[in-house]
Image (cartoon, rainbow, N blue to C red; front, side, top):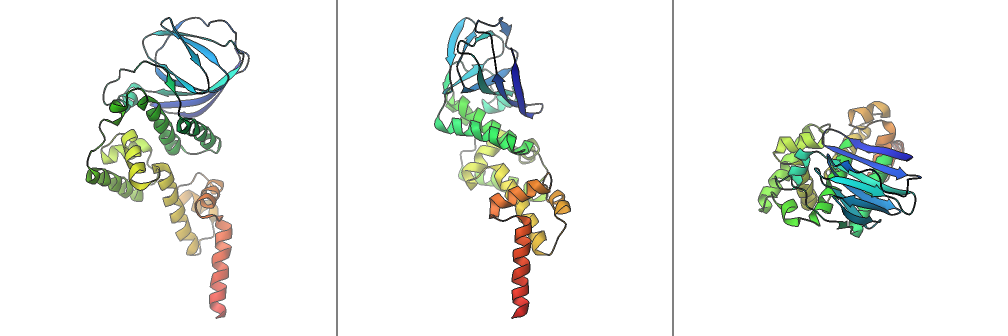
Length: 277
Protein backbone atom coordinates (compact mmCIF):
# COMPACT_ATOMS: atom_id res chain seq x y z
CA UNK A 1 0.00 0.00 0.00
CA UNK A 2 1.76 3.21 -1.15
CA UNK A 3 1.88 5.49 1.88
CA UNK A 4 3.43 8.95 1.96
CA UNK A 5 4.28 10.04 5.49
CA UNK A 6 5.44 13.57 6.32
CA UNK A 7 6.85 13.70 9.84
CA UNK A 8 6.08 17.04 11.47
CA UNK A 9 7.51 16.37 14.95
CA UNK A 10 9.42 13.51 16.51
CA UNK A 11 10.94 13.31 19.99
CA UNK A 12 10.89 10.84 22.88
CA UNK A 13 7.35 11.81 23.94
CA UNK A 14 5.51 13.23 20.95
CA UNK A 15 5.29 12.14 17.32
CA UNK A 16 2.98 13.63 14.73
CA UNK A 17 2.79 13.18 10.98
CA UNK A 18 0.61 13.82 7.96
CA UNK A 19 -0.15 10.53 6.18
CA UNK A 20 -1.48 9.95 2.66
CA UNK A 21 -2.67 6.49 1.59
CA UNK A 22 -2.65 6.68 -2.19
CA UNK A 23 -3.94 3.29 -3.43
CA UNK A 24 -4.81 1.15 -0.41
CA UNK A 25 -6.36 -2.31 -0.71
CA UNK A 26 -10.11 -2.24 -0.09
CA UNK A 27 -10.24 -5.34 2.10
CA UNK A 28 -9.32 -5.58 5.78
CA UNK A 29 -5.64 -5.43 6.68
CA UNK A 30 -4.16 -8.18 8.81
CA UNK A 31 -4.90 -7.76 12.52
CA UNK A 32 -1.96 -6.35 14.43
CA UNK A 33 -1.42 -5.45 18.08
CA UNK A 34 -1.73 -1.84 19.20
CA UNK A 35 1.50 -1.04 21.04
CA UNK A 36 1.23 2.72 21.51
CA UNK A 37 -1.42 5.33 22.16
CA UNK A 38 -2.42 7.22 19.06
CA UNK A 39 -4.98 9.61 17.62
CA UNK A 40 -5.93 9.42 13.93
CA UNK A 41 -7.71 12.50 12.53
CA UNK A 42 -9.01 11.99 9.00
CA UNK A 43 -8.37 14.91 6.65
CA UNK A 44 -9.77 13.48 3.43
CA UNK A 45 -11.69 10.36 2.43
CA UNK A 46 -13.13 7.60 4.56
CA UNK A 47 -11.87 4.36 6.07
CA UNK A 48 -12.98 1.70 8.52
CA UNK A 49 -11.29 0.66 11.74
CA UNK A 50 -11.87 -2.56 13.63
CA UNK A 51 -10.57 -2.65 17.21
CA UNK A 52 -10.99 -5.93 19.11
CA UNK A 53 -13.79 -6.86 16.72
CA UNK A 54 -15.71 -3.57 16.99
CA UNK A 55 -16.00 -1.64 13.73
CA UNK A 56 -15.97 2.15 13.42
CA UNK A 57 -16.43 4.45 10.42
CA UNK A 58 -13.82 7.21 10.18
CA UNK A 59 -14.56 10.34 8.15
CA UNK A 60 -13.15 13.93 8.27
CA UNK A 61 -15.38 14.74 11.27
CA UNK A 62 -14.14 11.95 13.52
CA UNK A 63 -11.01 10.84 15.38
CA UNK A 64 -9.95 7.23 15.92
CA UNK A 65 -8.42 6.57 19.36
CA UNK A 66 -5.81 3.79 19.33
CA UNK A 67 -5.62 2.09 22.72
CA UNK A 68 -2.51 0.03 23.58
CA UNK A 69 -3.05 -3.63 24.32
CA UNK A 70 -5.69 -4.63 21.78
CA UNK A 71 -5.65 -5.51 18.08
CA UNK A 72 -6.86 -3.46 15.17
CA UNK A 73 -7.46 -3.66 11.42
CA UNK A 74 -8.24 -1.11 8.74
CA UNK A 75 -10.12 -1.11 5.44
CA UNK A 76 -10.36 1.57 2.74
CA UNK A 77 -13.62 0.94 0.84
CA UNK A 78 -13.55 4.30 -0.96
CA UNK A 79 -9.92 4.23 -2.12
CA UNK A 80 -7.27 6.70 -1.01
CA UNK A 81 -7.49 8.84 2.10
CA UNK A 82 -5.30 11.03 4.30
CA UNK A 83 -5.05 11.72 8.00
CA UNK A 84 -3.09 13.37 10.80
CA UNK A 85 -1.46 10.94 13.23
CA UNK A 86 -0.48 11.83 16.80
CA UNK A 87 1.40 9.37 19.02
CA UNK A 88 2.15 10.16 22.67
CA UNK A 89 4.43 8.33 25.09
CA UNK A 90 2.89 6.88 28.25
CA UNK A 91 4.47 9.58 30.49
CA UNK A 92 3.02 12.34 28.33
CA UNK A 93 -0.35 10.59 28.22
CA UNK A 94 -0.29 10.28 32.03
CA UNK A 95 0.21 14.04 32.26
CA UNK A 96 -2.81 14.68 30.05
CA UNK A 97 -5.05 12.23 31.91
CA UNK A 98 -4.41 13.22 35.54
CA UNK A 99 -1.94 10.46 36.34
CA UNK A 100 -4.03 7.56 34.97
CA UNK A 101 -2.66 6.04 31.74
CA UNK A 102 -5.91 4.20 30.99
CA UNK A 103 -7.10 5.45 27.62
CA UNK A 104 -10.85 6.01 27.36
CA UNK A 105 -12.79 4.15 24.70
CA UNK A 106 -15.01 5.76 22.13
CA UNK A 107 -15.07 7.53 18.80
CA UNK A 108 -14.45 11.27 19.02
CA UNK A 109 -16.39 13.63 16.79
CA UNK A 110 -14.46 16.75 15.94
CA UNK A 111 -15.43 20.32 16.67
CA UNK A 112 -14.69 23.16 14.23
CA UNK A 113 -11.90 24.29 16.58
CA UNK A 114 -10.26 20.85 16.46
CA UNK A 115 -10.37 20.93 12.66
CA UNK A 116 -8.77 24.38 12.56
CA UNK A 117 -6.07 23.29 15.01
CA UNK A 118 -5.36 20.22 12.90
CA UNK A 119 -4.84 22.38 9.81
CA UNK A 120 -2.84 24.96 11.77
CA UNK A 121 -0.45 22.27 12.99
CA UNK A 122 0.15 21.10 9.43
CA UNK A 123 0.53 24.66 8.14
CA UNK A 124 3.05 25.62 10.81
CA UNK A 125 5.03 22.44 10.14
CA UNK A 126 5.21 23.33 6.44
CA UNK A 127 6.44 26.80 7.45
CA UNK A 128 9.25 25.15 9.46
CA UNK A 129 8.01 26.18 12.89
CA UNK A 130 10.35 25.00 15.63
CA UNK A 131 9.80 22.00 17.92
CA UNK A 132 8.65 24.24 20.79
CA UNK A 133 5.68 25.55 18.80
CA UNK A 134 4.83 22.21 17.17
CA UNK A 135 4.89 20.45 20.55
CA UNK A 136 2.54 23.05 22.01
CA UNK A 137 0.14 22.81 19.05
CA UNK A 138 0.16 19.00 19.16
CA UNK A 139 -0.51 18.83 22.91
CA UNK A 140 -3.31 21.39 22.63
CA UNK A 141 -4.97 19.33 19.91
CA UNK A 142 -4.52 16.02 21.75
CA UNK A 143 -5.85 17.57 24.95
CA UNK A 144 -8.96 18.89 23.24
CA UNK A 145 -9.67 15.52 21.64
CA UNK A 146 -9.32 13.68 24.97
CA UNK A 147 -11.42 16.32 26.71
CA UNK A 148 -14.38 15.21 24.63
CA UNK A 149 -14.08 11.76 26.25
CA UNK A 150 -12.98 12.52 29.83
CA UNK A 151 -13.13 16.29 30.44
CA UNK A 152 -12.77 15.99 34.21
CA UNK A 153 -9.52 14.02 33.94
CA UNK A 154 -7.96 16.36 31.38
CA UNK A 155 -8.88 19.38 33.52
CA UNK A 156 -7.60 17.80 36.75
CA UNK A 157 -4.36 19.17 38.14
CA UNK A 158 -4.90 22.75 37.04
CA UNK A 159 -4.41 25.19 39.93
CA UNK A 160 -7.83 26.33 41.09
CA UNK A 161 -6.78 29.75 42.34
CA UNK A 162 -6.16 32.60 39.93
CA UNK A 163 -3.17 33.71 42.01
CA UNK A 164 -1.54 30.28 41.65
CA UNK A 165 -2.02 30.33 37.89
CA UNK A 166 -0.56 33.82 37.71
CA UNK A 167 2.51 32.70 39.66
CA UNK A 168 3.08 29.86 37.17
CA UNK A 169 2.76 32.24 34.23
CA UNK A 170 5.10 34.77 35.85
CA UNK A 171 7.64 32.02 36.54
CA UNK A 172 7.48 30.91 32.90
CA UNK A 173 7.88 34.50 31.66
CA UNK A 174 10.87 34.99 33.94
CA UNK A 175 12.46 31.76 32.70
CA UNK A 176 11.93 32.78 29.06
CA UNK A 177 13.53 36.15 29.71
CA UNK A 178 16.67 34.32 30.85
CA UNK A 179 16.72 31.57 28.20
CA UNK A 180 14.66 31.70 25.01
CA UNK A 181 16.32 28.50 23.79
CA UNK A 182 14.56 26.28 26.34
CA UNK A 183 12.29 23.55 24.98
CA UNK A 184 8.68 23.38 26.16
CA UNK A 185 9.61 20.39 28.35
CA UNK A 186 12.56 22.26 29.87
CA UNK A 187 10.42 25.30 30.58
CA UNK A 188 7.73 23.19 32.22
CA UNK A 189 10.31 21.47 34.44
CA UNK A 190 11.73 24.82 35.53
CA UNK A 191 8.34 26.02 36.79
CA UNK A 192 7.23 22.64 38.19
CA UNK A 193 4.30 21.98 35.87
CA UNK A 194 3.49 19.61 33.01
CA UNK A 195 3.90 21.05 29.48
CA UNK A 196 0.18 20.55 28.84
CA UNK A 197 -0.95 22.40 31.96
CA UNK A 198 1.61 25.16 31.54
CA UNK A 199 0.54 25.78 27.95
CA UNK A 200 -3.13 25.81 28.89
CA UNK A 201 -2.69 28.13 31.90
CA UNK A 202 -0.44 30.48 29.93
CA UNK A 203 -2.98 30.86 27.13
CA UNK A 204 -5.87 31.36 29.56
CA UNK A 205 -3.93 34.01 31.50
CA UNK A 206 -2.21 35.98 28.73
CA UNK A 207 -4.53 35.39 25.79
CA UNK A 208 -1.86 33.80 23.60
CA UNK A 209 0.14 30.59 23.46
CA UNK A 210 3.63 30.12 24.85
CA UNK A 211 5.19 29.67 21.42
CA UNK A 212 3.73 32.91 20.08
CA UNK A 213 4.75 34.80 23.23
CA UNK A 214 8.27 33.37 22.96
CA UNK A 215 8.51 34.42 19.30
CA UNK A 216 7.40 37.95 20.15
CA UNK A 217 10.14 38.11 22.80
CA UNK A 218 12.65 37.16 20.11
CA UNK A 219 11.24 39.83 17.80
CA UNK A 220 11.47 42.41 20.60
CA UNK A 221 15.11 41.49 21.15
CA UNK A 222 15.86 41.84 17.43
CA UNK A 223 13.97 45.15 17.20
CA UNK A 224 16.02 46.58 20.03
CA UNK A 225 19.27 45.62 18.33
CA UNK A 226 18.14 47.05 14.98
CA UNK A 227 17.07 50.32 16.62
CA UNK A 228 20.59 50.60 18.05
CA UNK A 229 22.08 50.37 14.56
CA UNK A 230 22.84 46.64 14.28
CA UNK A 231 23.15 45.88 10.55
CA UNK A 232 24.31 42.24 10.48
CA UNK A 233 20.94 40.55 10.06
CA UNK A 234 22.20 36.97 9.75
CA UNK A 235 24.18 37.24 12.98
CA UNK A 236 21.32 39.11 14.63
CA UNK A 237 18.89 36.30 13.73
CA UNK A 238 21.14 33.69 15.34
CA UNK A 239 21.75 35.78 18.45
CA UNK A 240 18.02 36.49 18.83
CA UNK A 241 17.14 32.80 18.78
CA UNK A 242 15.81 32.41 15.23
CA UNK A 243 16.69 29.48 12.99
CA UNK A 244 18.04 31.81 10.29
CA UNK A 245 17.56 35.25 8.76
CA UNK A 246 14.51 34.16 6.75
CA UNK A 247 12.85 32.88 9.93
CA UNK A 248 13.49 36.21 11.66
CA UNK A 249 12.17 38.17 8.67
CA UNK A 250 8.93 36.17 8.54
CA UNK A 251 8.40 36.39 12.31
CA UNK A 252 8.99 40.15 12.32
CA UNK A 253 6.66 40.68 9.38
CA UNK A 254 3.88 38.75 11.15
CA UNK A 255 4.49 40.51 14.47
CA UNK A 256 4.96 44.17 13.51
CA UNK A 257 4.14 44.27 9.79
CA UNK A 258 7.69 45.18 8.71
CA UNK A 259 10.74 43.24 7.60
CA UNK A 260 14.07 43.94 9.37
CA UNK A 261 15.32 45.75 6.28
CA UNK A 262 12.20 47.94 6.03
CA UNK A 263 12.38 48.73 9.73
CA UNK A 264 16.04 49.66 9.47
CA UNK A 265 15.29 51.97 6.53
CA UNK A 266 12.40 53.56 8.42
CA UNK A 267 14.55 54.21 11.48
CA UNK A 268 17.30 55.67 9.29
CA UNK A 269 14.82 58.00 7.60
CA UNK A 270 13.46 59.13 10.98
CA UNK A 271 16.99 59.79 12.21
CA UNK A 272 17.85 61.77 9.07
CA UNK A 273 14.67 63.83 9.45
CA UNK A 274 15.55 64.57 13.05
CA UNK A 275 19.02 65.75 12.06
CA UNK A 276 17.57 68.01 9.35
CA UNK A 277 15.54 69.86 11.97
